[in-house]
Length: 159
Image 1 (cartoon, rainbow, N blue to C red):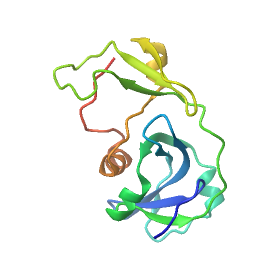
Image 2 (cartoon, one colour):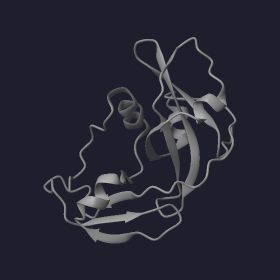
Image 3 (tube, rainbow, N blue to C red):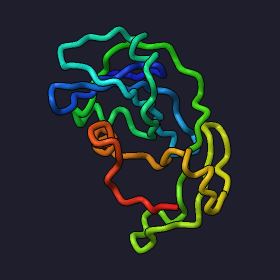
């Protein structure tokens, strides 16, 4: 069984003979001890074999909480190369107390946090919520879907 390490880089096959990459950035003990990945914006031709440092120097498209092993087992991504461990992300994640209740489409019950910090209630502070990534542990298929389309399609309340 392959054991992944912070810094590892993964490859995802996309439609149209393209591929994308993400890096295992850290684990979040406050969110089910899930893995956090940073997904890069650049897309490559299927036959390209970019240098790991070129990939890691690219712009980050989004961050997500996932279970790496699950995505590998589902054949959605594969290990590409070892990379150096990035610094802990300084971005905020958000979650709503109303998540999972389909009758609530707009929530005023938001919590935000950074990796290694406690969740703190912010209500409906749009300034902070606009810059915070969705912090639920995302199904690997949804991560790949966002790489394809630029957004998640699962239900999540808005602020």
